[in-house]
Image (cartoon, rainbow, N blue to C red):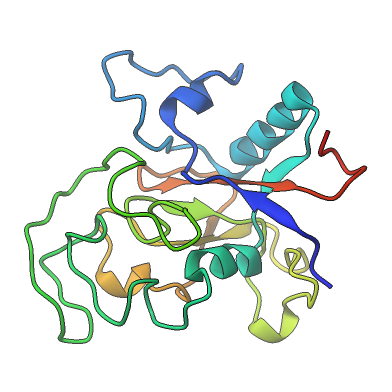
Length: 206
């Protein structure tokens, strides 16, 4: 049985990540509500450890199964709002159509603040587009995915999965089911993360 968990409404922002005593410097003139990017998977994990120590509550990255579950928010269509997409709904390469449907719209080609666009039915913002989000899993088949919703950590440990699509992505990359992987010791301008928290009594919830 999957354990209950909470998940952040937004991707971790520049302001939130800058509060961690890291070796990364952020320019004050940059919009602090933009998603934090360029961190590799190890740094994203380290941030969750720091946040756990700071708050006394257990924070971590989401597993792929958890990410897709909360991104869909009870829906079964490619995107939580339906079967097609426009740049009015998410930040991606709007010059490209999804499945030959939907309106074409100018390509922003940059990140936007994490509170842009409407949240999904469970209150989560930008599960589709803006920046990809690190997950805890190594690349695996769906058959290898643990039944309890936890991350698959058996396989090529040089890689970890990401989800969600980004500002320069084609619309197909924004689908709830779309998967990708990247090297754990590399970061990208289009790759960020959001955090999960255990909500079971006695497991760092107080």
